[in-house]
Length: 326
Image (cartoon, rainbow, N blue to C red):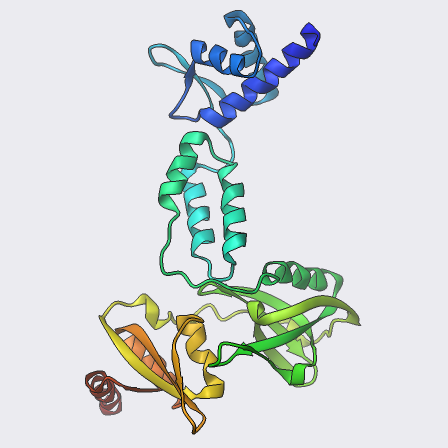
């Protein structure tokens, strides 16, 4: 290879070394830079590396000289800071909407934005236990399809399913595709939701996106009306009971078997059910017993009832009696 070619490679290798191994808190000395370049088969002298560092600065990279003994050189990124990367990694790791494979891919890409030293900190930071994972691989792409339909002002078509107490998917609408006008997408409690205008019902309908399958943009023009143009999310919605502390107890909840999804959505798809001959199902879950939990049960208007243990049922009755007295 010509000297000119070697010089260009040296500059590129030097940039890569600084990107991978240095940051605002970690630098490399001149002997270390020379040794790293030798690992790539490039011999370099101090003077040439000084010129290369100046060239990288002229190019716009933030190459700093750290005042240490011996002096160190480092590249400081202008992109995400380490705390920002930690936050993004935590958000990805804790998302119930993503599959395990999608989570791993996103975390890997986030790590590419960090130095070697920062990647180690991300590894220590991003472990989250007890998460509930989506099993719908296509959900990750469905959001893009929905936004594309909105941009083109077209309707979307998809099949929609619910999970039953048997753990299987059960298609709604007789298995026929839903065709609706996409209005807005929201993210709440780890899941994405589509708010759409349904011409058949002449009203807004909400769908959980990871329950949607075969999502595609249709040739039908989107419906336009005042309800759609004036739509806005209610930002005053109360927090769910799971955010509040309280005594941890194992409770039994009973509901019609075809309404098991209410419990599955709240506690995850691995909840054990006892199926009864009368068409009901009983779920066993661990909860933080609190007024917020009792309020969640009461708000279901008898569709889901608390049936055990007796002590917690009595506390629930006292809670209801207190509400009536108030």
